[in-house]
Image (tube, rainbow, N blue to C red; front, side, top):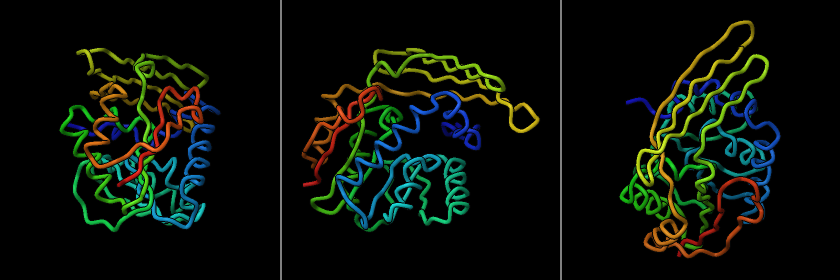
Length: 239
């Protein structure tokens, strides 16, 4: 079984930039600004589901010590390449959010940009939030988003040199199949890639109960700061 995004990690940034443009950039900037208000630098941050470093890299530039985790080795390879080019230090760990790994304690944990939808059952959800609690110092914070069902839809984007077809197909009441087939012009050659994996829609109430089970107390609903993102944002305190 392949890891989601492994087949197109090197094209991930370009695909999202072509698909969402300034909206993508604005959400990243809003998140970085939110983090600075919650926990000003210097501080230790762990970025779960870091991908190619959309948050890890600007946060490292801002003066944070950042550890980026992701289950896709290919995505982390892109992150490391970008970090080298930008001359910033980001430690990377290839693992799922629920996996155990040696770690110091952090001031802030991030679980944003739809990371939760890759958790397919309550055992994975509980283990992931328990892991977040375990790596945070007492009084540390978790910033997470809960994707709404409006994000679980198919879309097609076509521009000069780019054709992206994403299908999100319902399999059960809560499980969906994400299927992607994209063709893009890279330099003077066309590149084709495809991907397919399951994702899950979680109700807010399910996540909030799981946070309580993991030892978190919800401090604030920050969703208004991310209007239009298609997700609810919460700040939780590790008791």
